[in-house]
Length: 307
Image (tube, rainbow, N blue to C red; front, side, top):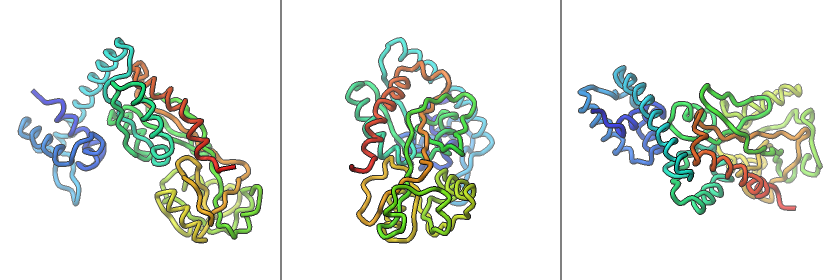
């Protein structure tokens, strides 16, 4: 008989692409995941993983097993949901993937609140970008995702996934203290031509939004420096190397060398909680969504500049 935990490990490698990423998502060590798959290979007398460069590739037989595993895991999830719903209290393990600034500026307060009020609920957080986390929910790799979108780049939700809006995160222009915009109460998008920018890399929502918005205002942006993390972008602005458009959530306090200026109209990104269809019957999902919404005003206030 096939072991469900070993199938879960193989399914996680299929979803996340590497043994290390699968281990992080499951809360195991990479060696533990490798051992589970080795045992599954012996159990099925089949090679499931093959070396591909520095990573691994699933064989055709492994892909077939993953399809079966996804169906079995869905059955287990429905059963667990029914049991938890009958008990009426959030309980069991809940895996959540959140994008970095939400993982930093919102989720610690949400997780602490849930842990204090529902000790039987074991919530596990992973930091994952939105373009990956939504698909992870659809495939059953995580129970819930906290993701975001922008007005010109709406979030695409796969079939079988539901969502609820959490709130809106304000984005502002950050400029060096000596910049001509630093003394301004606000700047219109049409005035942004000729500026050097620091920005996240291509493929990230913030990068795509900046390009589309500036081109829509008649400017081709000059992106001088790129970095994944917002604190790095802030440091580059502080060094006088460019200006940046950065959301407030999880940004942290600004150094004295950086000035925040409002952009008119004000850009916002919308935050969502996403889960698989029908899982909202699970008290843990419903309570986490409620807590996200309840904690959002405080997170937004902490992200705002001091008066």
